[in-house]
Length: 438
Image (tube, rainbow, N blue to C red; front, side, top):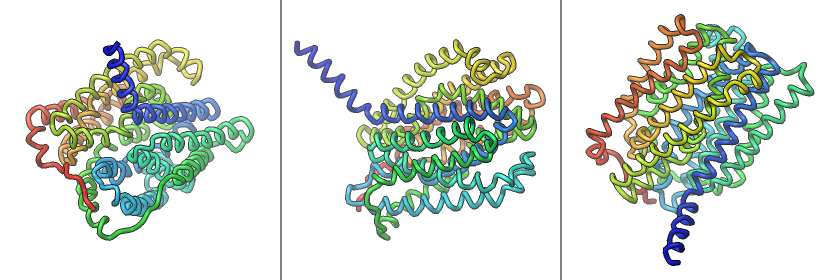
C-alpha cells in the first residue's frame, strides 16, 4: 500500500509542477487554432491572392514581434525569476515603460516604411494598408507582452485568458466580415480585426498586472542585464528574421502574392506540429533559469535533455497525424490542389521537427545569459537561408521556402551542439546566474 501511495504522491507532485506547462499548452492550442481558423476564413472567403497580401503584413508584424522577444520578453523571462519579491513592483514599472516604447516605435516605423517596403517586396498595395498594419502591430505587441508576463509571474490562467479574449474577438470579427459584411471584407479589414482582438486581450491582461512603480535604483540595476541581451539579441533577432520571416517575404517577392498565400496556408497547417514547442517557448527560459539556479550545470543539462526527448516524441506523433489527414485538410478545408501542396506541407513538418531539436539548445544559452553564442549560430543559419531561397526559388518554386528553412535550422543545430559538447560547462561561468537583490 505504501508503494502505491508513493507512486500516487509522485504523480500528484509531477502534475502540480507541470501546471505552467499545461496552461502554456492550452494557450498555444488557442493561438495556433485561431491562426489556423484565420487562415481558413481568409483563404475560403478571399482567395490565395488576398491571403498573400494579408500574409505579407502579418509577417512584417511578426518581425517586430521577434524583436520584442529579443529586446524585452526573453530578458524578462530570464531575469524576473532572479528578482526579490520587493523589487517586483519597480520591475513592473520598468517593463511597462519599455513595452509601451517598443510597441509605439515599432508601429510608427512600419507605417513610415510602408512605401519603400512595398517597392522592395514587390507589393505596391502595401502603403494603402499601412495604418491597419501599424494598429495591428501595436496591439499585438501589447497582448504578447502581457501574456508572457503572466507566464513569467506563474499566473498561467491569466495568460490563457489573454489569448481567449484576444482570439475570440478576432475570430468573431472575421466571421462577421465573411458572413455578414462580406462586401467590406479584405486583407485590410482582416488586419483591423487582428488589431481589435489584440486590444481586448491587452486590456484583459492588464487587470492582473499589479502595482507598477518606477525606481531609478532598481531600473539602474536591471538595465545592464537587459542591455546585455539587447546588444546581442538585436543582431541575433535580425538574423533569425532572415532565416524565418525574411525567407517567406523574399520568396513571396520572387514568386508572387498567390504563391506566398499557398505556402503560408501549408505552413499554418504544418504549425500544428509546433504546438508543444510554442508552448515551451513561453515557459522554458524561466524554467531553465530556475533549473540552473537550483541544480547548476547538471540541472541545466538534465532539463535540456528532457526537453529534447519529449519534444521529439511529440514531433513524431503530431507529424504522423498531419500526414494521415493531409488530403481532407488541404482539399476539403482550403479547397486547393493536394498534389501541388502536399510536398510543401511535409517539408514544413520536417523544418518544424528540426525546431524541436534546436530550441532546447537555444534555451541553454539564453538561461545563462550568453546570447553571443546564439548570434554566432544564427549568423551561419542566416547566410544559408539567404543563399538558399535565392538559389532554390527558381528551381523548386514554393517548396524552396521550407527547404531553405530545413538547411538553415540544420546548420545552426550542428553549430550549437558542438559548442555545448565542447565548451558549455566552461562557458557557464561566463554567464550570469546571480539573484538580483533590491
